[in-house]
Image: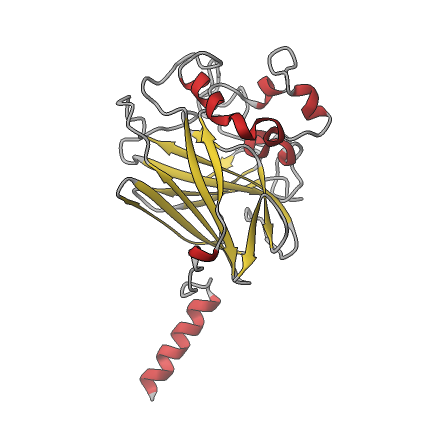
Length: 288
């Protein structure tokens, strides 16, 4: 009797601490959206908004989203940039221009579940910028408070003076949000899974911080016959640096894959989309 009581208390504490024993969704019943992550080259927000360089700048100023113009042509865009035909001064030989990714989402009233699945592209054989990690996957969430996040997603954190951009003068400057601050919610929630090492739960405000978040429950990934699958479990509730998620609301969402030991800006990225919690969006996390 005493042992059963101890076990019961332990399980109750585990659930209270963040749903460690929460059952994952039945993914066979969750619709998948194919989103093509593409190689972005040197296309920071400043380049995008420069009308003489990017023809879509005028549309953006009218409120048109990047996805509304480019969703169907991301693979072609990635091919042009990865080969150096456009806005890439340092092309990576043999690197894939794009990666089609199956994205699924669900919730159980306590946790958000995100599942990403894609086929591993052939290795380009280039430099191993991150020798320990052949693959990393990160996603960002934003609560409709950062200017431009509803149009370009996490491009609002990508600037021409960031440390891996050509001509950057500060080798410590990371992604940031102009005027970003946790107070008032002007930030992106950032979570990253790594093939090796612990996942990170942080945020991007006036700088990128890869720690401090409290919402991540788990991040697990595996490669099965050349297909990667990464599943995140994240509490809907959040603390400092976490976007608190609520049923009936939509949030700005984007993700990035660092493939083939890539680091810094040499990743594949999605355009900006919406994630809805029991709400209609580009990707809906319906309750199961």
